[in-house]
Image (cartoon, rainbow, N blue to C red; front, side, top):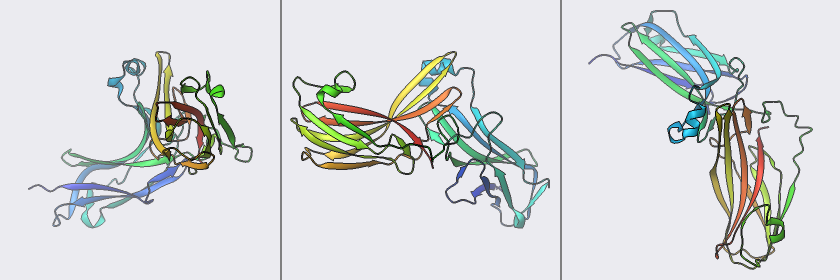
Length: 311
């Protein structure tokens, strides 16, 4: 049985999460499966750190295929190097350190790690071990990026001037008809009010507020908060706009007592949401729907466009 080798990558930070201009450091270890082997002859041992916007599920969307037919992944970050110039790796000296800065590539900018329907933003470090006989052994490990203090367009946020004001809402038949999504029946009577702490939401604090069903003649089955992400890709070839649900939480179960104030808090999911962004042909934005569903099929949906930021 021929000897085998394993390339192991380990970051110094336990959560593998970094921010713009952070130094990313760690170590790569070449493990020998044969304990009696003293050294390994190699051609090279190299590393490459890369971040990119890539497209996925193109085969299921003809318009997306048309728009992105001549485009590959958009590089956001690129750094690379070589661990050693030596042609041998000794078993007792088989660990190599790496350290580099998280900086944007060319005219790109660092964006948050994100997993969407048609857009994905991902970062990883890859190590290539080429043996003397030309055999290539690879391993790669993802790391995660957060954009702190950056607005949708990539500009610095002045938190002293940022106004995160509360937004009161009132839901009645007169206020909803013609302006919001409502599946009504003739003569329905209801009065629901509440408050949203802010439509500008810090990622760590989520979407917060309260709701009060003051009057509703129908029996309530459930009140939910539905988080929607809106991905848009647009260039000279066309436009794709996709709105998908990424989270649904129930804040009221059953026919709630009238006049009671119910607080709510929605925490944003780590990978399926990010700070709102607009970069070249791509944008990712978010909305929260407050959905009231009755047992008789009566349904009210109130929409809140939100801006997610990190502080």
